[in-house]
Amino acid sequence: MSTTNLFVNSEIGTLQRVIIHRPDEGISRISPKRAEELLFDDIVYLPSMQQEHDIFRRVLETFLGKESVLEIEDLLYEALEAAPDTKEEMLDMITDYEELPNSARLLLKGLSNQELSQVLITGYYKTQDYILFDPIPNFIFTRDIAVMVNDHVIITKAAKEARYRENFLTRFIFSSHPLFQDLRQKKKLINLNHIDEFPPSRKGETVSIEGGDMMLLDKDFLLIGSSERTTAYGIHALKDRLFRDGVVKNVVQVNIPADRSFMHIDTIFTQINYNHMVGYMPIVSEGISSTVEVFRQNGTARPYSSIKEFITCEINSNMAFIPSGNGESPYQEREQWTDGCNLVALRPGIALTYDRNPHTEVAFREAGYDILHAQDFLARVEAGSLDPRQLENTIITLPSNELSRARGGSHCMTCPIQRASI
Image 1: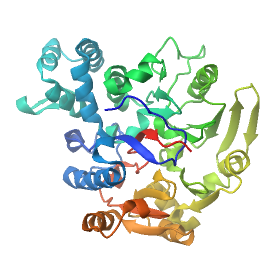
Image 2: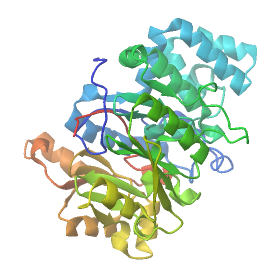
Image 3: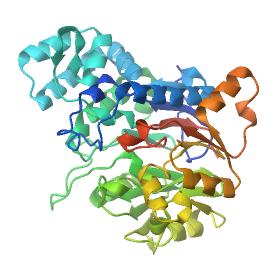
């Protein structure tokens, strides 16, 4: 596995390597009473959810190759194998945080690395029918755990307690896995959890930034949403570090409503092509409860009244916005909720979305895109009647009866660590 070429400088450059996570058995233990606490909006049926995610993975593998679609549980296992000393420290941190008795600590330390990687994610030791701690169902949303910004990785810091173990595991993977050795040696890992580097403010404001609120639209422009999950203080603390290290020239604070419906900025807009974004237009265009401020490396700043105004003035004057729900209410509200704006681009003009947003599909067609269901796509590729390399301006729709109920789309379910430069 090559440790070089980890680099992302856009949202649409050809995707070359990505981290995902298949829904795991921990999800099947979410009860109705605990769902909200664990940041799930519904009780999902795991087997169907896994089948849908398997199709998602197969589509990714068709474009990237199997070796380039990385499962986070595999990365955790490989990191455990590579760093036995750091493993002990990580287990002590997790067991202390989870307030586990010493017997559980000894049990964890006695497991094989294969068993341990499963238990740390699911919270469940199947061999002894032993529930050690809560599941971390949001680990399927790998976008949130870390973000590649040009040639640096930012290890994020979750806002909600339900995601803290994800954070422990992510820090361990990036600090121990051979894949990230080059980044470590060149000191290109920025860890928002490092309390000395990112302490609370004197007013007690804390640093929390999740990956769904970070978007690199251009090598010089990093957008960060100030949202339900990401604090304005965290944005400014990170901004100062990025400017100091010369990672980007502009950090853009996108203020959005602190509302579950608009959890991260990638639930409101994502880029799918050079001149196309998908967006929830009441916020993107009309600026309802939303403003933008651009902070520049030279110390100046400029405000904008809407996301659209900022993008067309600073990023691309030709950018057009494809409206979720085709811009009609109540469909735009419904389809923003079911991740109609949350797409991941595999290359310019080729993107993945859920198959349950019909009015947004109309908008895609009117903008010149073909719609191809994932199962039809895979069948045609396997039959040899379709070459994915020849596709242009196509939206591939994923089965989503269960996946969509977890409240995160294809953008949320991918952590790109390598894209072709554009």
